[in-house]
Length: 103
Image 1: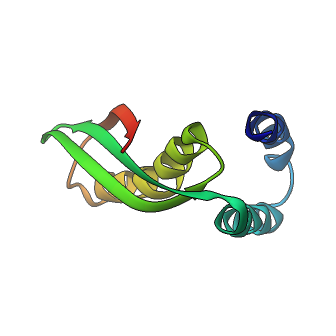
Image 2 (image 1 turned 120 degrees about the horizontal axis):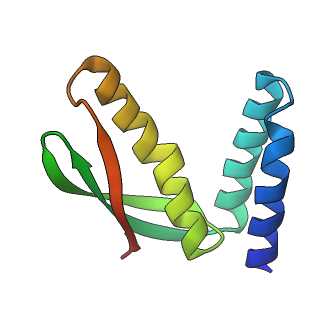
Image 3 (image 1 turned 30 degrees about the vertical axis):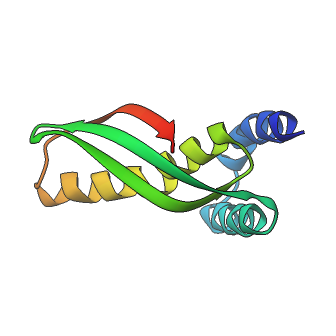
C-alpha cells in the first residue's frame, strides 16, 4: 500500500509543477498533515559533505509512510532548505548529501 501511495505521489509531482504556487503550498501542507495523522515517526541520519568537511546530521520526529518516504521528507523538507540558506549566507560554498539512513 505504501509503495503504491509513493508511486502515485511521484507521478502526480509533474502535475503539481504546473499549478499555481499557492495551490502547491496547500498540497504540501496537506501532505504534512496526512503524514502526521497516518504516518510513523522516524529518526534519519544524513552524511553531508561541504567545503568545510563531512558531517553527520540527525533529524528526529520525521513523520512518513515508509523508510524511503522518511529519507525523502528529511532531505527535501529539513536538510535542503537549511543547506540552501547556509549557501546563500556564504557560510558554505557547496554541499552534497552522501548517505541517508534510518536509525
